[in-house]
Length: 136
Image 1 (tube, rainbow, N blue to C red):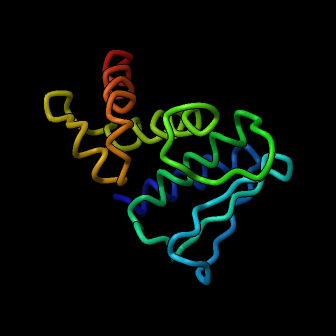
Image 2: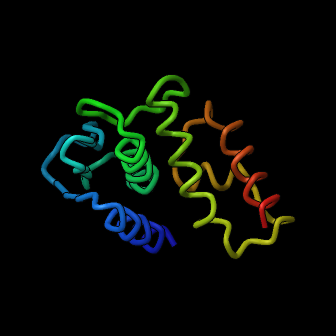
């Protein structure tokens, strides 16, 4: 499922004319980056938490769609433009993850674990999941 979601995010980026590149020679601690001016994202395939890559890609897509300036790096913050990008990433991932999940089986902790989302984002994840099911 993680590969399918990653692929769907790449398709989503392409719709918005966002170029995504991949690098496997970076340090495992070098986060993914986005450049809103050039509409390019660089994904570190050597990242130390591989299951987090879809979340990071969604995060970087959100930076570009928000028009955030400068060269931006993934962080698990809840505030400022990084917090906004994390919230946007969660909103992108929730429908992809839960589209075929009965509401009675929706678990915020499983979602967060699946994408290695920081525990400080639990309230944002919970709200996005509730919003998703309320909109159905």
